Length: 224
Image 1 (tube, rainbow, N blue to C red):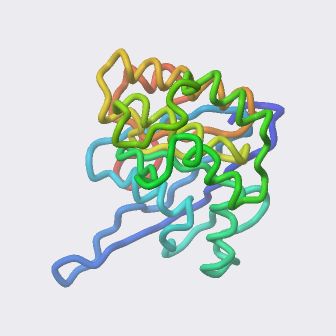
Image 2 (image 1 turned 120 degrees about the vertical axis):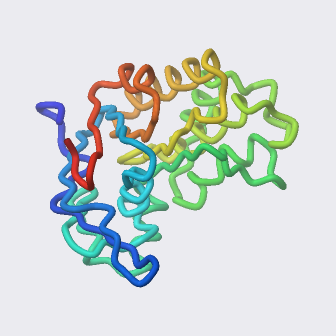
């Protein structure tokens, strides 16, 4: 974890198993991980190693069997469904490979969606995101009218609009060609640094992982 910065995320002894074919399959066997505010961390590991499971647990989309996840000093295990949803809304930015934009909303409305429901819409920051992401000429378009790279820019802008404590990204460039992936990741890193939030990105690419501050590898259910 970057020295001197407060922790955005602290994961300790995290365990998760799933029931399959009548037996319990342990996916996470005691994961320990910390991400500081302003730090970018790549999470790598072979397919099926539990990377997406870990991100879903951190986001409060699923419950762990044991261990602790602390976001901004708050333990997720102490929160109910409503509390986890509020934390996800107010303190987390989520970016996925599939973009997950709202088809019926324009680019402009997609960008402001998260910040408005969080009650933290900042017009000046919105304008900066539009400029930095190169979206000014696309604000009236709908997601289906955009390229993959443009959609992912909107998704990143939407996630960062409320200035979250932590940005979680699950293979955010997986559907993009190499040049566009590099461009999108560079923009994400720059904007993350601008907000001072932590950034945890799942990726299969060693090349992209090397562009972040630090790389951790998930193997056999633990962080190597």
